[in-house]
Image (cartoon, rainbow, N blue to C red):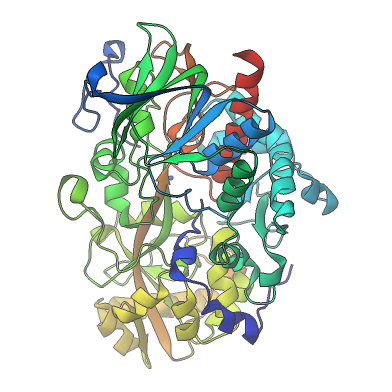
Length: 582
């Protein structure tokens, strides 16, 4: 399998892709027990500072009441597919979101047994895939819930494509980079990454950026779906912030109350409420309480700003049960200056991470990585969060990537998958400085002086602020392993070793970057939210990152796009189930 080359025209055209579109990509990760409302049987607190209590809202505070069959809360990856499905089923529904526009689109999305995979001759062993996902979660998941994505995502993507194709978009199935063992072991990595794009952008950008370029042109998946929903006579109610769910005493969820600029609005839903509100990555109080590993391994956050855990908290307030362990989606891309530690800076909801940019894909390439002592400490060829997790056991929780002037050849040989290909493809067509400037977050990296270049290794050690003797010894050893094409120290594959022998030499410090959280309200295979006894709460459904039962401790990065893919599939499945059964 060869690398994808990018011509000069493609590289120059990257300058026309705005920073907003680049930042939108990402993809769209144990931990301490979580407080569950009213869950004394599990020895957990009835209330916690992150959870608070449902607001008391008197009837005379409600300025308007609306009634619909189906209420969808959240106009993101799950909510938009759910709403499109409801529109095609001629359902009476209302889609509400607290923002002023649809959520930015995560372009890489995973599906199984789609028509594009069949055309490419890609065959997926569904049983092996199901158990690979289960292995990632250490068995702390529902295989029945995972099977919804495994069995229905192909049909979901074909359904969505009919809408996207009508808007002039095509789909790109990435099959490049899946035919070799990774991480010194043999993960099961079937090609599943699909991306919708405008054919007109194909000559202007490398394949990994086609989705971003399309979004910059106004053709992101969620925008196209929003236009489609509007064409069917349904509008999105923006500026609706979920305040609480409405549930009959011990019985059915009958609607929700929203805070709007005009006051509280109650929406009654006769058939059900579908929560599609995302995770809690944008809520530092929840992160600190529920996912302390993030604070030990992350220097950055590349969040969707509206993902503050609203749906999760509203569900718990009326008796829903949440996953017991966190599952942060951590990428190895939080670039920092030397001496900066992982963790939040500040207090409460104003706390933030100290990175120079929210995400820089350079960190995802498997170059030599060293700690503050100038020493190598693990196999760099690994899923994104493994690096951050390993670095949590190093001083400051950070690491430094080191490489030389042969970076273009190295990037081509590495054969990375997923959005790490942005770095790989750009580096093959430009100088390191030019390529880095075109990365998401690259301009901030250069402007703040976090990308280091030196003519000698001794000079680089000074710039990186690491002990010179140990750094030089580490590089000598790494070059020895590269020359042997055998990583005797940590077992990295030979094709992912790289020499550090040709000046100039480069280095950049990183920590993890959290994109989202994947632990949420427990659900069954029909997306019904479960109570403390793991029985369905009538009338309440959840899809996407506010739902749980699938991930634990991590995000299976090599199964590219499985998070967004399951989100889209769950939204469609939930609506069809509600339409047929409520």
